[in-house]
Image 1 (cartoon, rainbow, N blue to C red):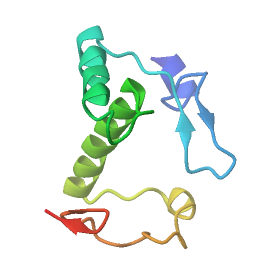
Image 2: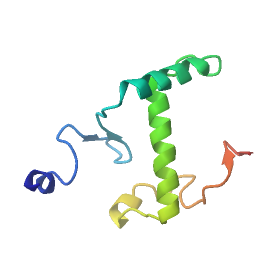
Image 3: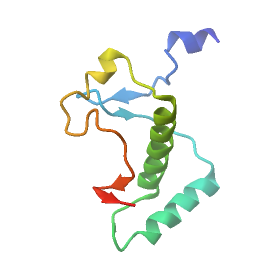
Image 4: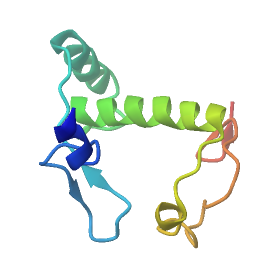
Length: 103
């Protein structure tokens, strides 16, 4: 348990982008889930021929986290939120649209 406290709940290989808004991590994924993501990338190949299983996994993770953050009305610390102020979508409510196309 002490090791977890020393590394602030992140692995030693975690890296942050220069602008601070992106974090690069290694994730362990069940092989069946990976193959599903790969088949889903293939399914979308006409629209996104360069799409990968990893792109699909990032999308699933982002959507799951965004929904949960919204449900909890979670906000980052002021230092984290400062990375996003001034961006075009900062502070806009999450709506039922995808690229301004309502569902």
